[in-house]
Image (cartoon, rainbow, N blue to C red; front, side, top):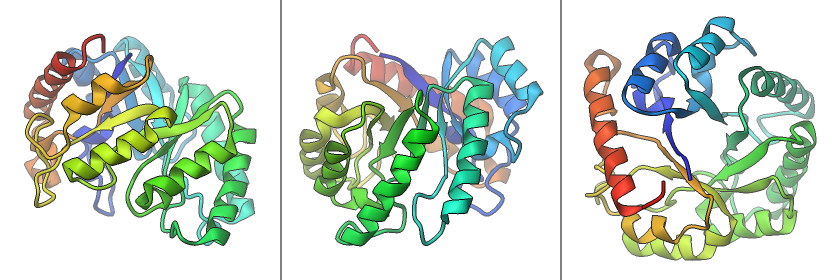
Length: 267
């Protein structure tokens, strides 16, 4: 059961138009020095090029394994036409092969309503194109708000009925309330292939994993064998780019990782 580090956790520009303010050539050795050996990569950190030799060399020299590509491919026909989807999938496949990713994270129907049956059918058609284009890559559909995952039962039905061996769920609470998170987990547990670790306070602000509203100590030990997790957000790193402190963020990430290993033996 691997514990990954997400490069988005050390990217304070993640939610503003510039998207990136940190360079992977600097981040990768620092992440490795903090004790992590596997990463999930925020796709904008790889620039617009399908492959960059300096970055690939940095993975190798830092002894970091790029496990999951956290992609922002939009499986929504209103935003991604068939022609654009073909082009993006070709680019993504080149990137996966070049760096050696084993899995890709996708939003399941971003901007689409779980009550819209026509939208679900369109999404499934595009998902089939993804599976066909990436036959050797695990497809992780994140239970992220603002998508079909807003209804935990709908995203379960989609994955269950699609019934492809490479397609599963990447679990994070869709609603940051303990009772709702536990109900969501109970429903989705058989389909979970990976987990994104973050936590929130009741007001929605980020909290340490041990102190927020999501009871990870009641969720993680009950995952199926072999399921891993990614440390996604670190509270001290949620700031503006000019306030970001890489060293402080990585120190807190080490503390968060220690907590996860304490409550989830074997990770």
